[in-house]
Image 1 (cartoon, rainbow, N blue to C red):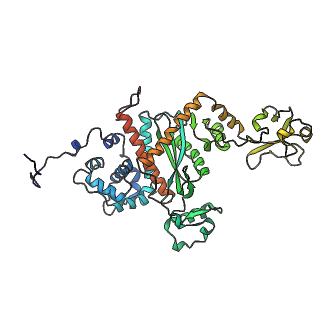
Image 2 (image 1 turned 120 degrees about the vertical axis):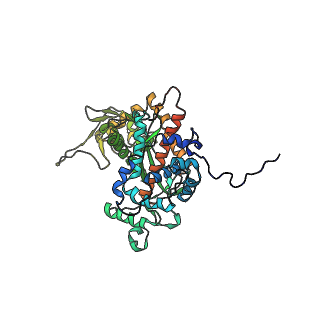
Image 3 (image 1 turned 180 degrees about the vertical axis):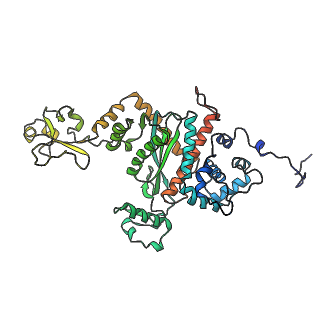
Length: 460
């Protein structure tokens, strides 16, 4: 007999339990085991008025935002619709069957208001990292750092030369542009980028590895290499110098917040600059598993710096011809330390030695003497060079791929290949929420399928 649909209503009352309709292995159920928002209300208490209409629970909005970032729901309007219809989302957000969902405009008001003022997303992110540390997912032995470009919500057609930016009329530009002008006034910045967006001036014009250029921000990840947990994240404009500088900020913040300093730091050549290596080795006692940024090797078959022998005791170089290159040759009436504005010390050979040297054509054919600029951080650079020859460095090169995998997951699975919020503060909010979602997903996956030969702790 052919079946047919039942009438619109078979019973007057229904016995329905939302708890039983969310599978035990559902992603949100596993994530909920690691999410503790009990202290969120205390953190936000000072940002709510004691009078007036009762607002939506901030925990509800945080949980809804996490649902959106975990499942790549980029639109807040669509997120509200999904939370209204999806039973698992209702269970995770503690809405039950009859709870009302906030309007999408409520998210905007709270994101740009009390959530940003209270740094609630940073508080949420660090709470998840603290939980990962408590259950043994962060050992602090090795950290890896890298950055990835994320397109800003900016249109190329609405950009002007940087030289014209300060002449803009404040009354005719958007709030984001006014904020950027205020930043310039505070920092006293005079040199501006070649192009600046009128939509989002904090972003920078940059090209990715495929060669496509756009206005972008950079998300910088610092991860623990053991389980790939993100221990810190920092938003910067798409500028290599600022991306590298953010490494110091993240390492010091992790040390201050969690009392963890890694034994080794893994990064690519961009992080192998002399000041960065000097800071890692001399200030932090961290082994730099980083290729040295070195452009001293010559390509014209003449002697490179590596062909000269360094004598630390004599504070001098010895050339292949057996002569000595010294610093501060000649007499000076005023004492000087010999350090240039590029943080280097110049070692020079004697003109007499160079004129009579048989290797002059292979050493300095176009100058009268040979000079070597030695970085004041050269000892730290030598430490990094020695590390690159060890088996541990080859292992670190493999572990660095964990950061790249997180960026691929961020863009392909979480759909964060373009920002929705504008300004550096908007980029910071989005990157913190995305990193929090990635950590929660990673912890949920490890709880469900622990790696071989490793037993995962059971969450309390």
